[in-house]
Image: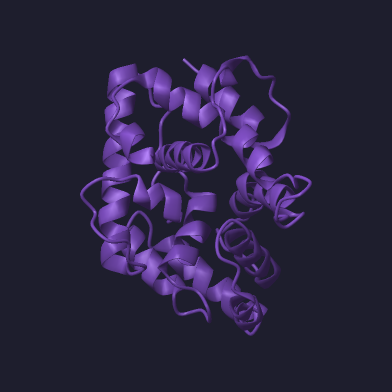
Length: 235
């Protein structure tokens, strides 16, 4: 379970989980004959969220997202968990101008992540979890995505709730762990999103019996894996 990782001070365990993220995503969401097939576009959606969306948002003079990005982000979020088609239809009701204006104001509220998250929830079908995904895409140093598996891995948070008070506690614990890992490693490589990704990887690998052995030896195959490997090698 990812709770074991959260309580683990061994940097090797954390690095193994983080570097195995791309492999676990591909293993988990690649269709296997005789088993229930996951959505075929999950891997492509994840690459878009982890790599292309952050570049697009940060390239803008004032950070914001547009309607088509919000719709695709919702598809990404639902593809990794319980699929709820009603949310996809509802989020499409947000007008592009509204999405741009509200997201601009939300990003302007950072580093107050709760105020930023609250602003984004003014959009239709956007709750704290989706809001955290929007903020995390552009500001991974401070904001972790509220992934079910990552939240389950953080001790002392109690039953998972999809509200702002819970998100605040979760974000505080994730950022605290990132600081502790950076202190232990004497670096600044760890951030909120990387801790969240490592916890997600550990949880999914355990749940679906995906081995993380020798992940360091696997060659990066593009996308998230290349970015993670590059980040871990910075000194």
